[in-house]
Length: 233
Image (cartoon, rainbow, N blue to C red; front, side):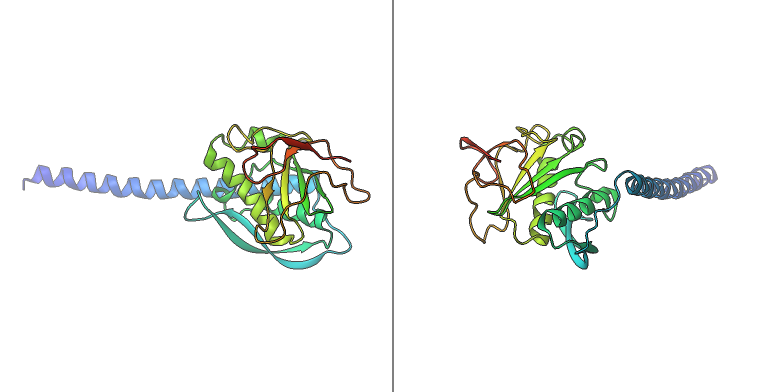
């Protein structure tokens, strides 16, 4: 090997090492910026939308379903200690707020960071109605996988922490939407605790003091193929 070739190889080796160090440094800076952004978002939310608290709150090991750290196309449960209410509707809002605001890493987020739970209603038959802000539709990436992950994270978080719920209806800003962001059907119900009691018809009245929002929904599971029925106040 000539002296010139040795020099060229040495320079290339040095350049590769420098590139690897730079890329690692760049990755750390990006991760730090993401963490700072998350902290800023939490601080902003604390001012705009203070945490939901009730007199019946007690510390509970809640199970929240975010995207898996090693496989962002799947969900995994994480135990988080949260003060949770005994009231099913308020408890549901609390765990959904944690799902939105506190993912372990930004890459494990399943719902847009600006999403909000505008209202949550529980009918006597165990039907849950989650009214979410427009952001859930406009900022969730359009695609069957990302949309399914978003809806599944909501459903599994609810069924893991609020055992009285039997099925879930998702509204967007008080209105029924055909899809979440173009793919996942929102016109029906999503079954919770499928091994438990079957869902009842959608004509049940809301709990006292909780007005039912306007909506139409099909009485079925993940895919809404049957004729819609009215949720009556």
